[in-house]
Length: 370
Image 1: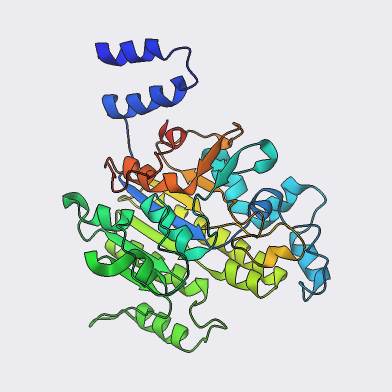
Image 2 (image 1 turned 90 degrees about the vertical axis):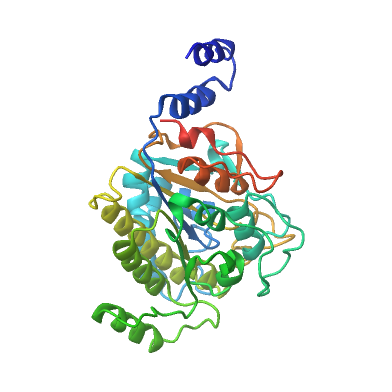
């Protein structure tokens, strides 16, 4: 304890004082409560919609919106703060009050990816490994040579067979790499069991009889229902839920469907959090981390795409909600955070030390500082 107070005194006048104080307080004084982490991703959701709601330059474009009147009625207000609450009611009524939201560039707070490709596979690799890999430069179905945080956690004695991933995009079978025996349900996967419940059998039937417009991505409602059922039945300690519709609808140039999907995902997140807070296994012992794999263009035409050369595609955002995170709301410090920091942040919440890569980003100190 003398060392503890000595370090605090040395850092008293330092900009690092607050972060170091809380990190030491958590680990030395044993106050950390998180035992479970649920990582949620919304593929390619722009920071603009998250923080400002529907884009005024796009919502009225008939090329991008089938029914402008109806879409404006659902998602438009002249006040950006009202608009964003219309689009994400749970996020702005709960996470913004009880948790933390990083990446509002209008406030000078930024979140970026470090990989230079600015699309999905490189983005998810960075997010899950904490580092960029030049070998991963396409969305091809190539098995990830890197160990993800999911695989690392699943190898630990207290977490064996307590890690799971559910994703709308089928490439997650390769991104995560199932060599560690992690439960993965992605793309058109169904529940496979010799003893299916009536609900599981019905979900399987619905998915198989509801063809998606995308070859590699199923509807998010199936990913969500499969994930929620697994959460209730198996109580994983680390879970990834990766929704994909926002990116798919954006590429199709369907802004109304993009907004509708974003709104639906907000409801999915609310449903997960409400379950977490009513279940004895998870209540007050679970942290949600929510983010995206990449940004996209900022213009009324460029919003549809992303990647190298598309300005804004490296701009992302992060949300944290849980018992060990202060209620900071919109984080206003003028700093740059990175998706590469999340792998070690997840590990820190689980009291693990993820050092798989010397280039991995450090844990976000303010996320861990209660």
